[in-house]
Amino acid sequence: MAAQTSIDTLVTIFGGSGFLGRHLVRALAKRGYRIRVAVRRPELAGHLQPLGRVGQIHAVQANVRFPRSVETAARNADVVINLVGILFERGRQRFDAVQTFGAETVALAASAFGARMIHVSALGADEASSSHYARSKAMAEKAVLAAVPSAVVMRPSIMFGPEDDFFNRFGSLARFLPALPLIGGGTTRFQPVFVGDVAAAITDTVDGKARAGTTYELGGPEVRTFKQLMQYVLATIERRRLLIPIPFALARLQAQFLQFLPKPPLTPDQVELLRHDNVVSEAAEREGRTFKAFGIEPTAMEVVVPDYLWRFRKTGQFRDRVRSFS
Ligand SMILES: NC(=O)c1ccc[n+]([C@@H]2O[C@H](COP(=O)([O-])OP(=O)(O)OC[C@H]3O[C@@H](n4cnc5c(N)ncnc54)[C@H](OP(=O)(O)O)[C@@H]3O)[C@@H](O)[C@H]2O)c1
Image (cartoon, rainbow, N blue to C red; front, side, top):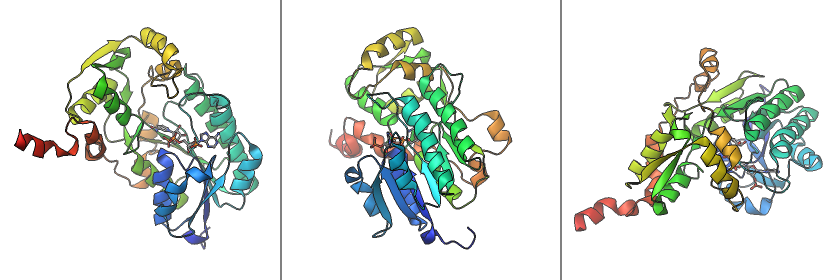
């Protein structure tokens, strides 16, 4: 490994077409790695090509539910990274199939080719959780480490960035809803983390800066409750909306119906997930299994979020000019 330069190093990324994927592909391309992005529909991964030099990024077809396709995509790779995840179940895309057995399939392929393995899990992964998402993530970690004991596992908190699903979702909802829900009273704690920082930590891991067989917990500089995050979204988009506390049981009932929408805003399993705080553990802080290990100072959401949430303001980016005319 020591004599290998980054252009000699082939990195296969499963789930590279997603939100974290595009930031990671850009960061790895900047450091000169050869990148194979394994995606279900390579024809839709065209947006990744301009993130690197000609020929540096190559998209191939793979579905983690189909071991043959995973083996082909992992062949000859020096490093295999698994970013595949789903937020809700649909058809054959079940948490167990995609997040647990899919992750295990990727790890077994990495092991077969002698590649290093990096697996992205999530804070809150817990085999005893009432959330199926969190249980499947915990079981995936176990399966990955069984297949590749030297694998590095990354557990981010909720990620923010221009294409995120969290701030954009509530910013968008606030445009037409008179009120935003505070599920379970809005007391669940989060540690929002910048997607670019998570991509940097993974890139450092590819560079060889992480401890083998270690699970890192990645959170931003501040812990905020769900209610504080809703207040922050509303302040940023300059809208006044009621914040209505909804008990978990009622939210679960609503989610029973909402889950059937094509892109459900809430599912019963997500309500279960909201019962648990999503913050870096004391053990991880104590043992240095955080951004500190990489010398990364996590970015505050105030630095990044207003740059893309402005589009949910009534006057968009023309706020000052409109005021001066009115
Ligand atoms: N976003 C967050 O706030 C957050 C927080 C904590 C942890 N995480 C974890 O971080 C990882 C990346 O998250 P993200 O936000 O970037 O997710 P994302 O945007 O939804 O991307 C998920 C990726 O997985 C791929 N995928 C889904 N099913 C697949 C299958 N059967 N075979 C192959 N690829 C499949 C998707 O490709 P298609 O286009 O083919 O569907 C997509 O590229 C996930 O494991 C997620 O659980 C995310």
